[in-house]
Image 1 (cartoon, rainbow, N blue to C red):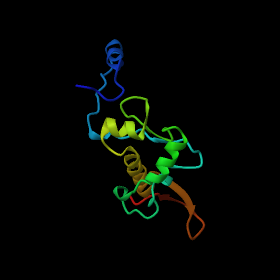
Image 2: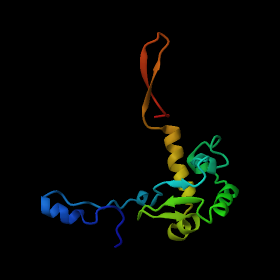
Image 3: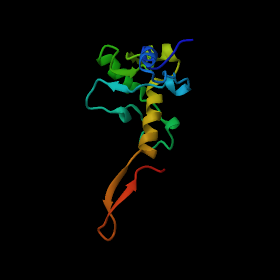
Image 4: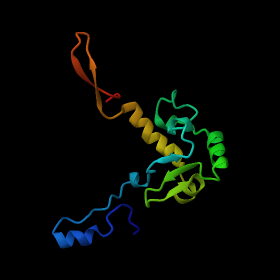
Length: 140
């Protein structure tokens, strides 16, 4: 069985120190992208989608294939790179599709859209009486 993750030599180190051995995560999420790198510094992930501001859920996102093609043509096929979850490599869009048979840009978009919509964290603001209150970001 091929393993995915970062255990590697940790099991040997665990034996030597008496620590618990590493347990590989086997869930489907282990095959999600580690991120997307866009070579044009003026763009961010949301720019790679035609409907980022109007989509209701992440699965509704539509990749702007014309923009992705323009970036890839401009940067020798490496205008948009996707982080391989199995290794530390950055894959082209075509390499990702050949390896995982999915749309890596859209998968990363779904991950980030969820964070944008439901978002982690809190921020401080003043209430109607001028008192500092903490408000949860996102819907949950």
